[in-house]
Length: 480
Image (tube, rainbow, N blue to C red; front, side, top):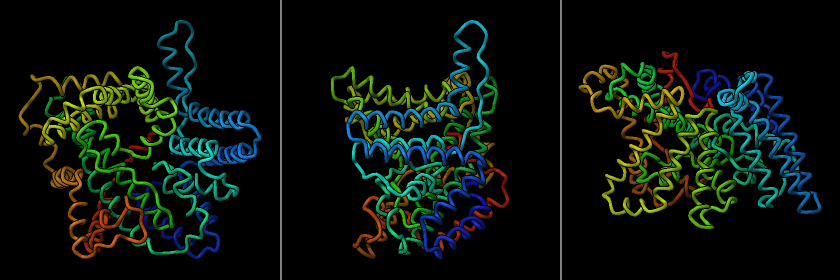
């Protein structure tokens, strides 16, 4: 069950919200609803998740009571090994077995393929962040297993993030959350995310699917670039839209989730891009991997090593395939390039040129992300960069003759930049200079997705109409 589905919007969500708001024990209602939500799509895998929750809850309590630093470190190690072992078994065992079969002589290892539990990469990282924060004494240990389970199982972020740390919602989790001041804002965020997902991401998806599905010998450079552009729009509005829906649902329930995207395609460098793209993941790797490894302390050699490790793991986190690893190292290479001198070249260049550089590098990187495997990605890139493969734009535009697709491309090209935010900030600044009393600064309603009610209503109705009349409703990050 995805947020952008008729079942969720008209059946699950209304029933859940009714039960949540009439319940005298909202943590219990949240826990019950989240278990039902996950069980709907994953069945018996819910017991795997409940087992991990129980083990990590017990481990954190034991670590908090441990009398020595060595004992605390041992418990932390065991917790992390358990969480990563489960992730590795389900997500990476098959990839490792296939890789060993490719390089080692002798009898091949048996294929180790498992159906991937939804959200396993996200909830594994949340469990690890909680364990490390308890070890560091950054937050007090959670003494209520129901609250801890609700934190991990909370359905708005369970299967696709953002990666919410315990410290982000601890106070709200322990409160009664009976205030209703942000319900309206939650619906506004949800509708904006729904429109991003359904009206833009889903609409441009067939163009990307067509281009990446063509045999390399029949792929013109023009169509290849058009497919890469379509996928760049699809993956951004797909994931950003889902994150906005998650933030909106959290508001409805009395929680404040961290911002996950900040117009990454408006970046002027790859370093800037990673400050804006999937913020909860990049900050997780910064705080729990890069800085503990030494960060940029200790000279250039160690900085290069640390960046390569982080981006190798970033690629591997997204998928068990060499194409994802190459995608991660590709981004890491550009970050190293910028860190060791190219940033000064960029600083001296016109802003438009810096934008173009970042966009082209990111678009080329998405080819590794989207292609079926590494050879397919290299063949696609060869078509993109072959000057003899360029054909008149009209031949590629035949895939865009549909008015809906043209409008989706236009809207996507407009809203990847902070156009809406700038307009609404100016409009609201004319009405009032007071910030919202309900939101932290980075989610102030003057700079957030707060639109006139008729616009939101029209977007919601149009999105529902598209969902009813279409069978295409993918969500890309379910793969991860």
